Image (cartoon, rainbow, N blue to C red; front, side, top):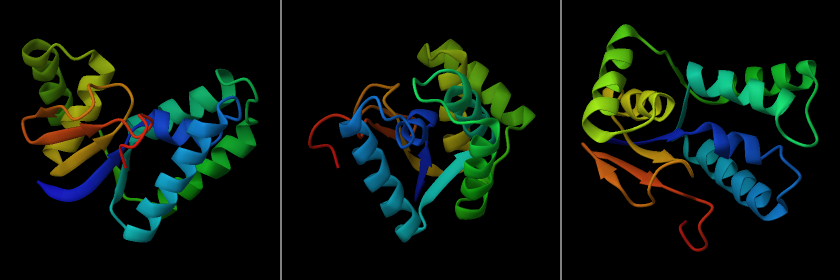
Length: 144
């Protein structure tokens, strides 16, 4: 695995969600460091989920135009990993073998098949390692 880091949807969303200022600041700091280091990765799934969440699910929603601008920026800043049939098949294996939800399995499979050694997300068990992919919850105090 490489030192590349797959950024899960919740990290991106918290950067724009004013309802939790502590998580927002953590997300902003983390995203800045990933831009500086050049180690961040996103996927088509993650940016799609981001768009839906910030335009429909957070208290102070972004407009479609604002969300589109953010997605364009993300795509210019970080490499965007495509969800292929091999990733879908690996995700299905992740559901079967590791009991991941379908969407979490897609995140894991995307990282694994693209040699990303780390996923930043609050949706997995903190410090868990599954087949070479490590999960860190950056919103747990003192994890970064």
